Length: 378
Image: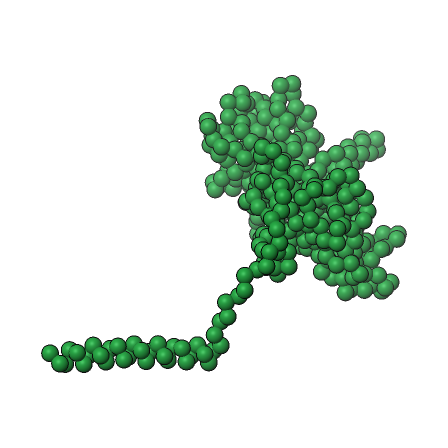
């Protein structure tokens, strides 16, 4: 009994100690990643291994998807371990270097993890634990999941460089604002919340350190599940014009409680430096449950520090993190001025267009007739 309890506590601590990249479908936890010269450094595949002396820890770099430059590091292997928790049953895990063959057979059954699956936020948690040789070149390393019902997809991507002179872009968390007070509500009575900002470098992810949301289950339900979107718009001319365009990145989340699932959205391809608007919207605010309650989302209000160049809707600053490129100087810079969008060129109506086309045909016909007449005169 003590061993089981210890295992449960260990997993619970693991879940709270390490960040979890999560979305509406599932979430990943990395509880260890490092460079090593030991081809099989793990004594057990269901417990996190502590690196030996001299080994280089890369847990957060692996989590963020950017290990960086490992060339001439003196290490031969990359070891990493963790778990993926999903709402659909997973049949297997695999890995792939760049566009090479997917190597399956990497799923590890872990009863201790399954016993505390509620803490992972999803129904089907499974572990992986791998030690793989460092490949030469600029590497995009992908982790795949295969569903029991069929289909497969990438659930985490990590890049690193293992060649001389390669240009490597490093990404780390950039705080647009900081703080975790309850404050910025989005519900039937409060409109969507957004922030406009300009970056000096590219970024490939956005996240919330915490959020609060309506909870349909438990002893004290606070409302139905909230379905909400986080959209990234590329700024053009002014805010109204920008928000009327199609977002360049968008994710939909259905939350079932506070911070469940954890929101940490990352992309394989970074967005280039520039001005953007990130907008959060609850899309089912009109729904009312049997208790007369509606869904809501509360973003963490910034109570410590706010970037002087950030512009928030209704002056309600909320905490937002970007996984941004490391640049010299400030990552967030001044926004461009809001200007009027250029007037749209008026498109002729169908009737006008038809008349115009007939006129063109008449002119062409007349020209052809003149040429024909001149040829006849010779």
